[in-house]
Structures are given as structure tokens and as C-alpha cells.
Image (tube, rainbow, N blue to C red; front, side, top):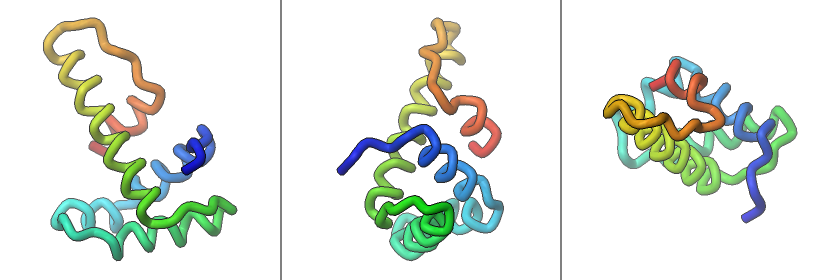
Amino acid sequence: GKHWTINEVRALIRVWSDKNIQQQLEGTVRNKRIFEQVAARLQKFGIDRDWKQCRTKYKNLKHEYKSAKSAQDSGGTSRSMKFFNELDAIL
């Protein structure tokens, strides 16, 4: 698919930071329904992404965050990640 713009990622993070969404994501692996909600909310911001794209981006961000975080924790130079602080607040 096409690359996510910074604004799209910010909007995704904004939706993801919603307590309700977070609680739903915490307890589940089969999360298609949740990402359908996320995609629907993004549409309200004029962002056209399907649930699969949202889920993939979410997983990638989470993975990137975790490796940046563990690099930081092990005293390595933190590979600075664009949305680290936003994700740090959520995760």
C-alpha cells in the first residue's frame, strides 16, 4: 500500500491512545473488529485506510518502539524513533 504520512500516523496514534481502544487491544489477539473501529475513526479525519493497514502499521510502530526502548534501556544510543514519546505515553 501507499506510505503512511506523518499526519496519518499521528491520527492513528491519537485514535490508539483512546483508553477504550487501548483496553480492547490489551485483552485480545483477534482484533479485526477493533481495527475496523480504528479505520472508521481515521475516515472521520479524512484518512482512507482499511483495518488491515491500520493493524499492520500498529504492529510495526509497536515493534519499532520496543526495539528503540530496549536499545535505550540497555544503555545503547537510542535509535531515535519519530513517534517515540507519543508511543511511550501509551505503552
